[in-house]
Length: 171
Image (cartoon, rainbow, N blue to C red):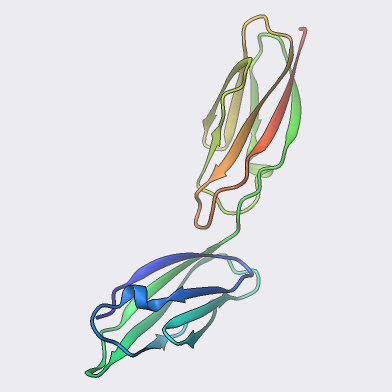
């Protein structure tokens, strides 16, 4: 019996996927019944070696089956989500004392991600709404502060944290 499944893979990379993970019962080999439309798939034993087309990002599928002494199993689908690891670069901004700083990081963060998260700064608060980070310095604080942010999940992976350096200046 073959069972459908899903895997996340990197854009412009090659990924080996153990189809045996999706098989139950006795089987001796695997078969690609329908190849992916947006990449290539080659069998190596019961592993499929998937390579997305150059620059492709999105969802691709391939159909596969197990082969055993009783013949070919049912056909199952492997859904391949192709994306890039997000990158959250470090940057700095200034804000006046007792004022709010709003940062839309959608044009700064690259790659595939589903949400943004932040750590707590030492001298204020930071929170996220979508791709907008809001920083509010502690009342009366003047000086340097910082916090980290990361792009989470997406189809592939979570970014390494990036640091946002804040210079809180007198109004």
